Length: 119
Image 1 (cartoon, rainbow, N blue to C red):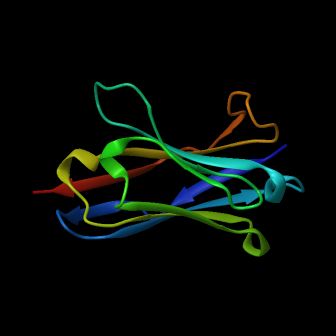
Image 2 (cartoon, rainbow, N blue to C red):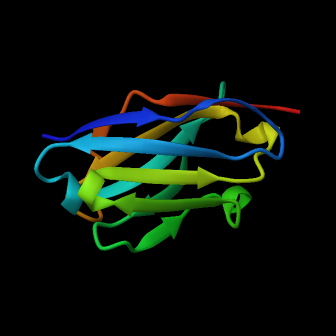
């Protein structure tokens, strides 16, 4: 069993930066693939980025490429999402998720953290 807790969200202005954290518990967290997703009001959930336990990264939406970076610190059981040059359209609830087996759907989900970017 893996439990995930996101933190680091908040209200910022366009152009600012935020770093989200996803703290995981459970013996297997460090070997899980962890992803970040976001969901804006009235929109479908969107894949943002993922990182495997060995650090291989995948980025999703073109709109965040070059601005968002995913990383992890297995010693701290934490995965980060560094978000730079934030835009109002980045406003959403951001979720982290984890899975033990590549190629399957994410199994474990956090409760989400709100990011609001004002213009």
